[in-house]
Length: 298
Image 1 (cartoon, rainbow, N blue to C red):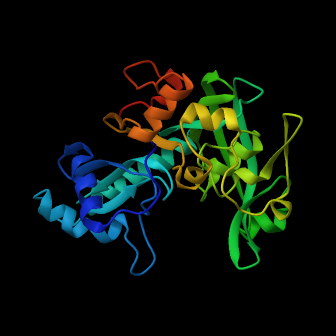
Image 2 (tube, rainbow, N blue to C red):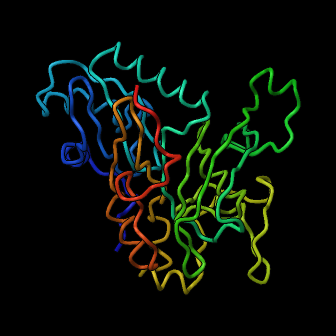
């Protein structure tokens, strides 16, 4: 049985976070966040930010913690926290300069439903928020005009991807975003016609006719629980009712810092999926991720 997407209570979430510390040095603390936990929640919502004061006391840390870098709500993986304002600013500048130099300080792994046509490449597109009825959603804008870019209504986004393994119509991908936009990785994967497993927001934009995938417009594809075929459900040991609780399989596994990389192993549901599908494990920096994911130390 896969981890459920149903939210945990504050006490269980704190316990998970306490047990998920992967690095602690000086002002820096790194955690391995579970999927579904927002970093900044709505008022009254359980979020990492709301839990930080209690977590700090439990870990015996003297100063307040700030979030330096973190994956989105539905993603799992590395959250970098700092108890020193100057350290926070220095690291944020380091990440910005690294991207400006054409380097990729963050590496994600993802399980996709579908296998990209090319073994590696780049997804580059404009992204913007679009109102669909009562909800705002992130949509691709393939050819944005100069005015929409100048007014910052559309942002040009880029993700580099590499297929690490494929089996039974699914794939394990390494993803390295050069830009940051909400839901960027999920939308980029749909443009590859390979939505992430557990993506209940964007996967409906990939249709299929006689087994051949094609892209639907956001207007023609309302948000719904991901549809998986019977064979894949059987491999994953899931019933139709359980799909809507399937977590998103996108994990921030590596961040390169000035002193070198930090690594967080994928969560149990992700590892179980890899075993069920016969896909390889996500490589670590020490265990063979490609040299382009490393940045020089400063």
